[in-house]
Length: 448
Image (tube, rainbow, N blue to C red; front, side, top):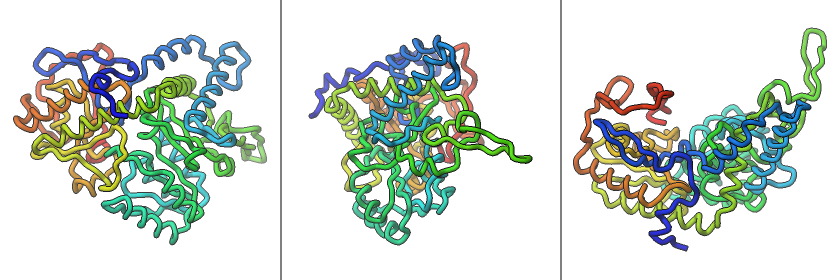
């Protein structure tokens, strides 16, 4: 169902900070355009309001008898049920609250009872942890087509007979959505389970663990309009119950005994086994409220809105001389609102700085914590990434297209210099809020 142009200029859901003016170098300001949602999305307005309502009632979770403790405990456990329901968790699946997708995948890596097969195009968070699993990891090099990649995966799965196949749901570089039913069927023939990095999939569309057969799903609240520091791992409990606790501490134990000079713990099962310490109540309730808001959207309208904006962005970029839009697989057409591209003759960091300083537009630049993928796509050259969401409008996309066209034709207008730590704006006079401090970028290698 294609969306009309008029429909594309209205956000699906209101987000905090939408339309706020941002300062420009040299003075003045413009309506800010945030197209870096694949890194961190703003809070939905409903999420921020819900968090504000919950904050006065925060108390200790699970171990207190006071009224606030009762409310906080109920809030966390209710959020856990909502999170599980949103992703189609099976009745016996565990919903483990974590800080992020990265922590969730590292937690699972410690529970895999054998080896893991993974593709080379993954985000580092779904590429590096598996080497720590019991049987290590086998990284499969992808082909130019997904059909060729499936064939390479089948060979590796047949030879390795791993315990787990770990894949992304949607690429954080190109937005391409991998066909999960095909991957699950492939894994099952080799006797393997499937874990999905859902960081870029969950904020864009629903996934049903029970229907797809996916065994584990990891995702972050900060990419799903709930940037309050929580994430989750949802999936089959048996591996998690058999694994050593992710963290050792209070809440994860039934009892601790002293035997000679040693402290011996009787560990809990289920989510509690891996949730030592005080849980992030605010983070949990924020994710749950975000999922309530997303679940209320008409899925056809949601899909059409994002597809319309993505098509406008991809077609517009392709029309700019010197711009190359990146794709991982020539035979995959399904994609979420994540688009990466290069601009001939212009360093990605410099282009991103110019977009922000001269046009008020925020995008991502660098290697996107997926260096092997960038190596295959660009020879390791950093790229630019624009990402869309439920608060994005046609005006946002068109603002980026206009600004990229100016950069491609005329280059940056401001003054920039390149030092040992990368590009910076010379004489940056943009006013900052009182609470702000000078930013220090911690790049993910060639870019974050």
